[in-house]
Length: 127
Image (tube, rainbow, N blue to C red; front, side):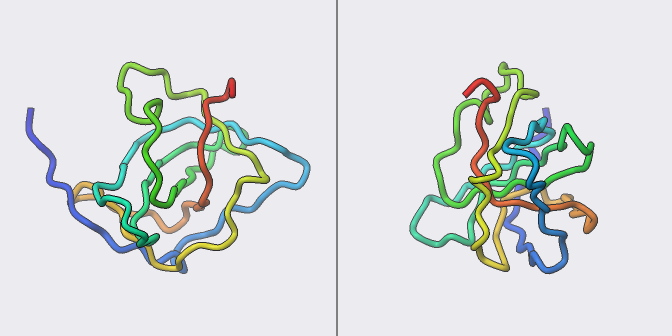
């Protein structure tokens, strides 16, 4: 198995679309497609974030979920776990965040500008 080179990439959020909350919904169901946890220890620099590439199960849109310097929940990195049962609460969406962030992704990672982004902690649907 070939090891993929990981690099630090700067993402300027002004090139992406912010997630638009639906006031009629309390929770969103999402499916995790790819997980890119940060390799930077939490030192107070909130620009280093975990990146979860997800699909919004309601709209079928791709959603970039960012989580600032927090320990990565086991359910997001355990390859034996079923990851199609995630959610986040409308009330947990963080409105204040850096405009430029740093993620650890494969060297050939390409960001699609039509993706929406959100800063929010993810939960297992049953929580």
